[in-house]
Image (cartoon, rainbow, N blue to C red; front, side, top):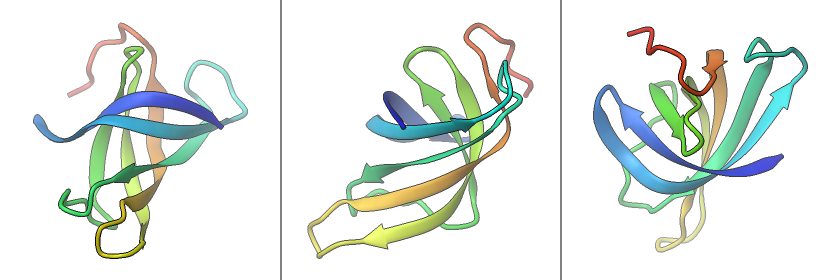
Length: 98
């Protein structure tokens, strides 16, 4: 898995910035592959299972993700967020389909 800097958005609202995302791309070329991964957020960041967010990678790529699992440590530990990509991971400079 590649470790990439990214930000997480809900609509146009920043949910979390300065994330380190573990991203796994499976097969395909040009964003046609399946993709998934994980990142950690502070316990005070509101992320919910089953909701769709937009992941904006620092290199310009972006894509919608569906949160599939949250793993909590202790009360002060970060929360591990696991996700599945929804649709294509848009390449750098690709027009925003919204």
